[in-house]
Image (cartoon, rainbow, N blue to C red; front, side, top):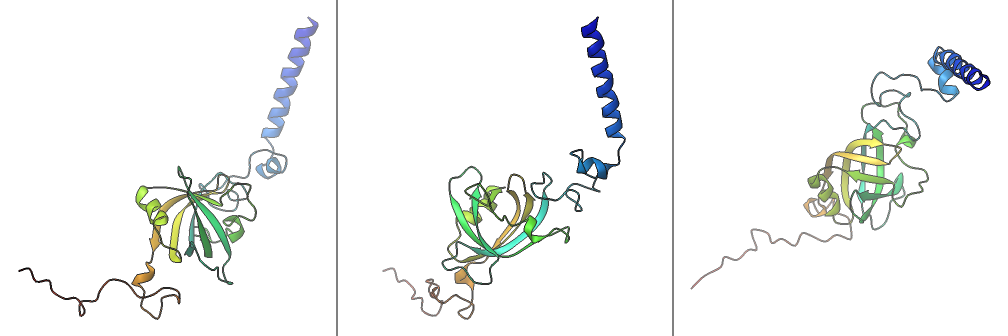
Amino acid sequence: MGIFGSFNRHVIMSAVILFALSSLPSTVQGQYGGAPPATTGIGVGSGGIGDGSRFPFRVKLSGTLNPTTPQEESIKVTTLAINGSRETYQFEIMSAEAVDDKQIPRSAIIPQITSMSWDFRLVGQKELLSKIGQSLPNTPVTIIGYFQQRRRDLILESVETISVHSLSPVERPENEGPSTAPSPDTMQPEHND
């Protein structure tokens, strides 16, 4: 009877402690390892966003893909990895923001130090991933997607690139020459005899 009495006391005490902890306000629970305060939606508000959050939130990153010489005004040069591929790409971030919640700080988006060989792992449709993989050095790009901090996953929603050769000569970087495509004025018609 001694073993059963001890077991019953343990079960009763555990139930009492569990009941007492569950009746505490959510802010007190968060301080002592319980559930965090509730948010109004997934990834909305400061309660769901923090270092290592599991809730994805929508971000917009703009910058240069595979820069040959990083610019001084850039925020950080990060490494992008495409999910399922061993290729990595350098991405010089010029601006980073949370799209739906302006209260999320830039530090929640851009990694300070990471133990992984990449800063962002890109996940998404093949068409969007191929825009990254097929871009030339110094390609301006804007990426919009859902970012999950804990895994560093960026689930792509859109990728906008601008071809360096489509820019006017004034906008083109110094190391990029003119487009190699012939102009309509210099094209000679072919004569088949």
